[in-house]
Length: 347
Ligand code: AMP
Ligand code: MG
Image (cartoon, rainbow, N blue to C red):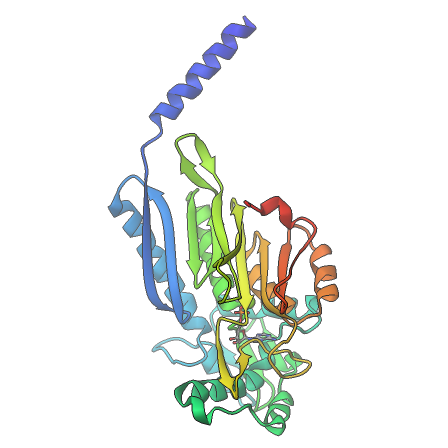
């Protein structure tokens, strides 16, 4: 009897597998969001079905992109630029989704001991402007004068970001303040979109906004569900290996911060875009920090924070967090892994 039941169960499972609709792998790419390339990889029964889903994803990401933008105004919405434009002036009423991002960012500021600070905007603007000019005219490229950086740093206290949740307003208490969510916006937006898709029943998808990766489930395969294989970029352009290693994920995020992503050169020295709030200079500890955890917003904020923290401090932070793993590449090229990172390695 027992054997018969097992046989019957196996038969039902086989039948169900045979009834699974056949899906094909599709990929969509779009530009213009968060200043980078967005890639969606998914499995669907038809191209039309996948295209409709990719379009929905693009629309949602566009909405977040506009809300979190500090460079452009959009008709009919108050965004982060509106908040910055009214610093020291008046509270600005904004969408709850923008308030939620700012609250999340404030939490991460405290978690990381200030290594991740969205109020660092005035200092980041100085570096941004010098980098932009230095890339346009490399012979005239300069490092920002110390005095300019220190003057900007006087307006970077996060306490000056006053959020009234009930009124849905954000007020920057000083005229020189400026929020910059470049270190978290992509990951946060990807996480919101991924969670909406999961709630709508999507069970297998890979979303990447400029390498900020979030998987929904695994990928279907003839034999069942397999993990997604993600390559982690080697920060050394001279290395014959373009990737440091591959990791296998199911429903998790992989996010890297790297000194190779955005930089300019002055007298042969490279100056990258991740700024250590303690020195006001490009952080000098690592060339790549990669975080794996479920929440893509957390992975994004953490990878930037860890980039700005000495290894021992960062390792302590990661080890105190549940479900978070990281790797650090130090300037010599040596790679250091958190205790559980090996569980994700494919090679
Ligand atoms: P990511 O590539 O996620 O590490 O983010 C880098 C971006 O975050 C930069 O281009 C800046 O806009 C911003 N940023 C740089 N340094 C910091 C910092 N210490 N805290 C918060 N944001 C930062
Ligand atoms: Mg980041």
